[in-house]
Each structure stands twice: as C-alpha cells, then as structure tokens.
Image 1 (cartoon, rainbow, N blue to C red):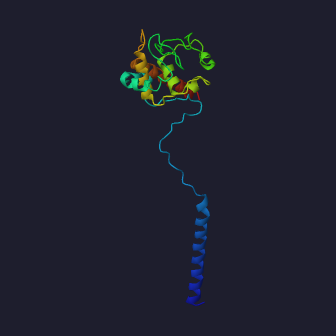
Image 2: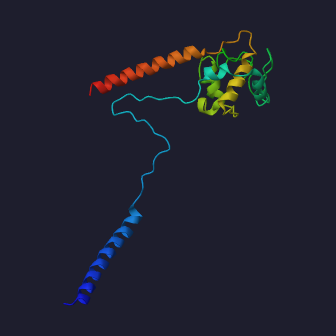
Image 3: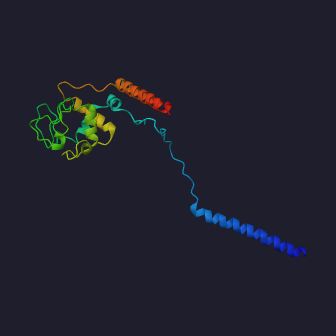
Length: 201
C-alpha cells in the first residue's frame, strides 16, 4: 500500500471522529441547561429543625417613632370622605374615628357595622390592629364595607400618628426597645429549640 492509500485511510478516520464529535454536540444542545444561579441565597433549615421566619423592614414601633402627624393629615384626606374624626362627631359611611386606638371593635351604638367586623368580637383596636386593617381590610374582615387600603407602611404610620392626636387619652406608641427585646428573646428561644432538635438526631 503506497502513502497515498494510507493518507486516504487516515483522512477517513479523522473525518469519522470529527463527525461523531459534531453529532454528540448537536445531540446534547437541546437538553443541556445551565443551572441558573439565584440572585440571593435562601437559607433552608435542616429537616427536623425549627423554621425561623425573619421579618424584613422596620417594625411598626420603629415606623411610628419616625412618623409625622402632619404627613398623616395628608393621608387622612383619603379617609374623610367616609369618616369623621372630631370628638362626638357624627358618623359618615364609616364610623367616627375619634379615639379609635384603645376602643373596642364595633363599639359605637350609633353606627351599623358590617357582620364581618362584628365577628371580630370584643377585641380592642391597637396600633398593630389598625395598621393591619389599613393595609388590607378585606383580609382582616372579609365582607367589610371598608374598601380603601393604604399599602405603604410609612403612610400607614403617619396616618396612625395623626389619628393618635384625636383622643382624650392617646395610647402611647409601642416602645422600640421593648419590641426589639421581645424579638431578640423570641429569636434566642427559636435557636435553642432548633439546637435541641438537631442535637437529638
């Protein structure tokens, strides 16, 4: 066999190898997916460990500490179409809100509350409850006549600061230190429980 024949055989082998490599690459392409790297890391507790939920953003106590009744007066403009806030003021489409924080839910005999609100029982309006109510009234009492929602936490805090100025005995804002202490204590308790659970495995 001369060199020309060997060259043809060698070329055929090279061509076959290249062909197989190309076929392999083409066949893999539709099924090859790069695993996307998440934009942030989510910590997942090990099986059996207590779940730790971390609330993002400042607490209501912190928001109230920096709230402005003057800014709240501008937020009140959204509410006054249905509510009054003067002492002994009449009701509108909604009840009078003078002294709302510290008052029993659905307490005014002069106003006909929805059954959804009456079902909240003898709860007393706290800053936390009013904040939750303003954020999503229907989630708190489905079927309530209240349709307006104040979505932004800073606007709700300002509105609460404004409402607090209309009361014979304003309820003090929750202390930031107390809230932080309670949160730290709860976090420590959860971590201790998690350590006990994982230590027992």
